[in-house]
Image (cartoon, rainbow, N blue to C red; front, side, top):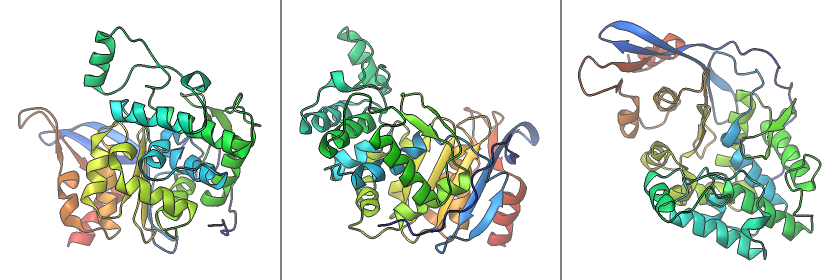
Length: 339
């Protein structure tokens, strides 16, 4: 699918104007406030709800991976199914993920030595214990972004580009990714920085990220975007990463596409292009899913499967330990919709 959407204004480099979105309560006392930004867009791309700052530039971290994967498909990445889903995942390093990464590398005659991502132990607790018990140390293949890096290497090999230096910003692969971001987000990038795994991170707005994700989720089946969306939907164990709530959310809502990042960024989209984007200001995770599911229900997703995600989240083992609830404009919108 070609990017025909006119490029709009770039994201604005400024301190984001986040607003209170979720309260943490103990009894009826508010003892914590999560600030952030959220938006909902309709199938035709209109903004139907927004709170906070959806135009400020930020780095989407791992939420960028599906866009990077689309760029790789356009450049000739020869993957489908679970290995394609793995190329867009933040995986926990379970045995199946590590086998998949090695399979991607082997497809291009590559090895773990070619990977340039940071090394780490697996995120999955059981796998990490087994890893340590064997005396294994941090490894690039076990690191959460290794599926993306293996796919970047394979893409470079298939396109005839150098595999050494594949993370350099002027490498043809990274230029292809930058162009794909501009096309899908319909706005130019304004800054580039190194991500935690070493790959370039391109600054976007929450609006641009959500718009790009909506286009991937609603793309024709046999387009590059459609192939990726199908792979992620059918292989949630590969695509959902180290957070099981993402897999649960995708399984609960038919056709949903979802991706998160460690800085409390969340983007979800339905096959018709309805989409939700969330950023929690301080990167705290506990408000992310409640906020996302509430906005998703209000943009027309069937509310019954979302009930377990939108219920006020209890914290701790007693009634006095605390709970979370949405507040501000989103709470008002939710009350009006359910009245």
